[in-house]
Image 1: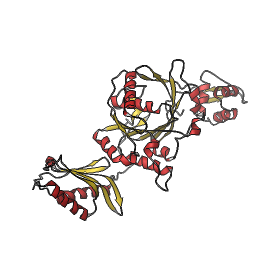
Image 2 (image 1 turned 120 degrees about the vertical axis):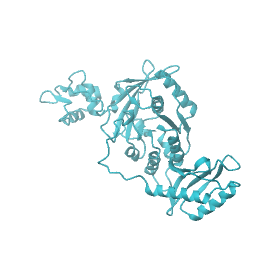
Image 3 (image 1 turned 45 degrees about the vertical axis):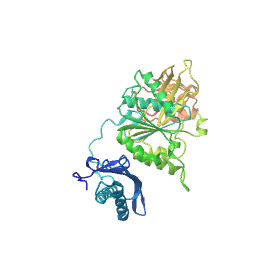
Image 4 (image 1 turned 90 degrees about the vertical axis):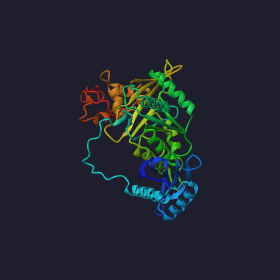
Length: 427
């Protein structure tokens, strides 16, 4: 019988667990864990580097960790498969199953909130778009440039290159793609990196067909093994899959974000809007489908694109912060995208007039007043807002100091009160 001089090395592996013994004597991995009738089931993989035949693989199958009968049956089969080597399979299986059951029963540790040490100030992976270790949604109509934006952020994170005035922490990136193929993403990565004046960094890529929930264990293991900092999900609709019999859109959204929670990385999820919203000029409060998408994401941005390219052939984008769980909403971000022969450049700019319709009414009025005092009628002409809406916004501005009425009657001049620029003010 082989001499196992060291104890089992037990660790979490993605959404499952791994137990390994010294000198490659044995490695047992379990994932796809599910509880049925009070018992814990999973898919077990067993390998040994010292077995006489094959490459070490011995067994892969569904397994009931809670059943002594299942352990005994598996131990006897492994004895037959590993001969002439003699390993204490019954002891190893007992040790591994006990460790998994204890870990699952214990769950996450209980901590005393209200007494924790201060969180690191480095809250963002990419400031201000991607909170570290949390899910972010960017949504918009098809063709607005969501995937290009995601590719640009992937290049920034994978390379650690600072661009557009955004601070970034370097880390590995995994791109999960339900919509295109590796060659298209590869070309975009190279062109965007060239636009930044850097070499294309390596980005992990996986073409996907199944819902994220079905492959969450494999993805979580890859995230852990490769120390992935950012996972791009392109896009939410395909990654969510369909609802089960009797379920609804809320169910598939909840299942998707349940899977995202296990990944242990920042997640950028791209999503779409309804056909009616595509045809509307108004701000779109949420992506298509379940409100749980917005509820479960930690930060949500709407992306819009100009209806036409300008005289230089550039596209203009507007990013609008619709939801955040920590701090205030960030002001709208204007981007210019320039497609050159061998590169793609992203440049910061002020939101143009066409895209300003997605800003809050207060900010649209401020923009109209930035060159001086205007009457309500003149503000209405500049913004497209109705007179009564303009009056309501200015009347509700009490204490904020953004607007000052000049004169006693509406229709006289209204002038903006000068205030310090706050980059995190809602826009």
